[in-house]
Length: 182
Image 1 (cartoon, rainbow, N blue to C red):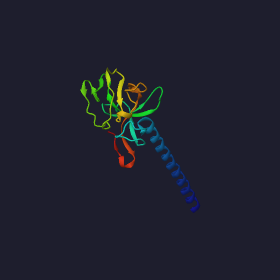
Image 2: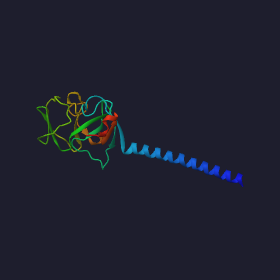
Image 3: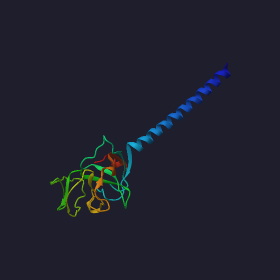
Image 4: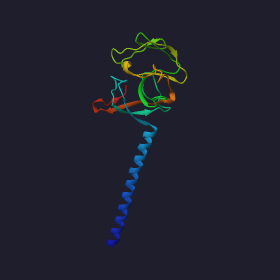
């Protein structure tokens, strides 16, 4: 009888271990699916978003989904097309249907000067003639206007909605910079 009880305990123990391993695998699959469909890991490259975000900072952002819409001044991750073909971090200024103009070092959206608190102090911008954005066009700028490839330059240009891959997030690295993206 003791031998029989020991065998039952051994079988029960093995089933328990198999179940735990199965649960761990399921958890990893769920995390993988979440990162592939809902979240996106982000790394800031370069100086174009200084002083708001610095080169090498890391965060997690929500992928753009129907419930996660882009608004003016949102920080977004964009998949560039053409020569660069990379992910870049920028701030949205113009949305579909907006009139955008840069004049005398100020950004105007629909003929109103934009409050621009994230812009690097004393940065200079060349004038950009007024344009009206199409139904699927966004105008983005880096916060460090002196050192940013953004909608003002031909290589990046106006952004289409499908290029915006993520919006709204949390910076987690370096640890002293943890917080919501602004």
